[in-house]
Length: 104
Image 1 (cartoon, rainbow, N blue to C red):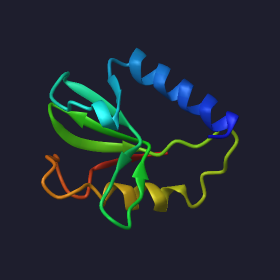
Image 2 (image 1 turned 120 degrees about the vertical axis):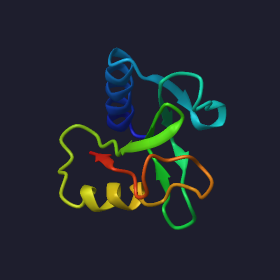
Image 3 (image 1 turned 60 degrees about the vertical axis):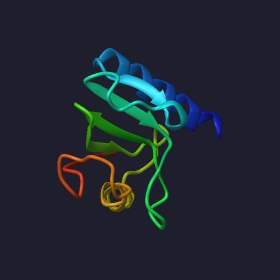
C-alpha cells in the first residue's frame, strides 16, 4: 500500500475511533461486539470489490466509507462508493439495501 494511502487510512482510523466506532480488520470482525463497528477492507459481492470501511450500527450495515489519499480528486469516487453500497453480500444484516450512507 502506498505511503500516502497508509497515511490517509491512519487518519480515518483515528477519526473513527475518536467518534466512538470500534475498528477491526475483516478477518476478526464481530459486528455485534459494539454498537458501532467499522470494518477495514471488507470483501463485497463478486464484481463489487472491497469496501474500505463498511459501517455497522447495532449489528446491521448502515453505510460505507471509501478512503482516498489526501489531495485525490473526488470526481468518480461517488460512483465507486455507490457501487460498494450496493455490494453487501447476501445474508448480512443491513438497515436498507442499498446502504443508505456512502461517504468519500
